Length: 138
View 1: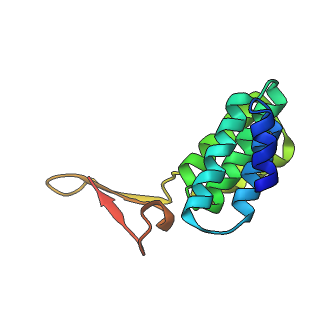
View 2: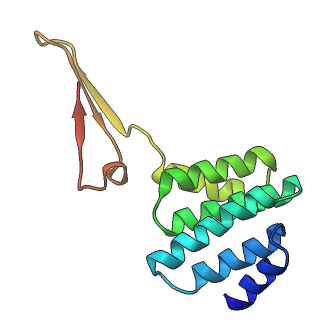
C-alpha cells in the first residue's frame, strides 16, 4: 500500500494509480478501515478516469468491492453503471448472476380475493431482509 500511496502522491490524477491503491487496500485484509479505504479509492479512480473504458473499469471494480462486502444494492448499481458506459461480457455475466441471486424480486405470491377484505401475500428472497423468511401482506 505504501508504494501505491507514493505513486498517488506523485500523480494524484492518475486513475490507474487509484485503482492499484484500492486493490492493495482490499487485498490487505478484512479490516473495516482498509475496506472503506479501498472503496473510497475505487470511487476516486472513477472520478479521475480520463476515458470511458477507465470509468467502466473503475465502476466494475467498485461493484466487486461492494459484493465482497455483501453490499448487494450498491454492487448492482455500480455494475449497471459500468455496463452503461461499456458493455463487457464478463461484467455482464457477473451482473446478471448477482441480480438473479441478490436483486429485488418476488419469488411467489398468493391473492385471497374471496374474503371480506381481499389480501395479497408476497414471498421475497431470504437475502432481501437478511432473515430466515419474511412474507409481506397487504
